[in-house]
Length: 111
Image (cartoon, rainbow, N blue to C red; front, side, top):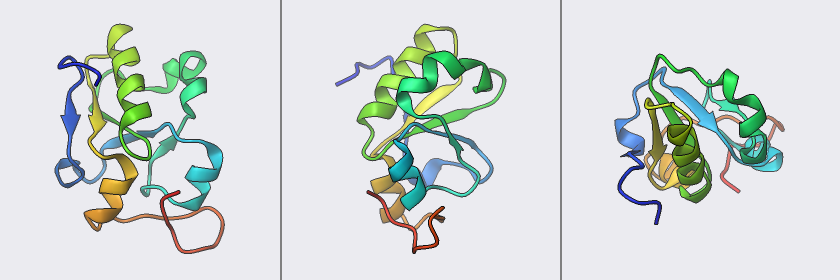
């Protein structure tokens, strides 16, 4: 869908402590996200690119991998060669049993 130039990583391959860039909407973020992830909604990425590290691995995350694939492609096109898309997004993260937290006091879930 996004071409071979967008590298992917599976939920099981993401190392603990990796820089996770969650590009979902605020309600999705509040319902559940990976601990330590950084929230920058997709439409804010162009204005907030300076927040994305250029010197360490970045894994871009959304619900299922579509929006994060677009953001990964966008960042790579703007000089970030250290970004990869999370295959299957937070749905795959949750299915893999990876830790999740919420911001709303409810059990973490993927919207």
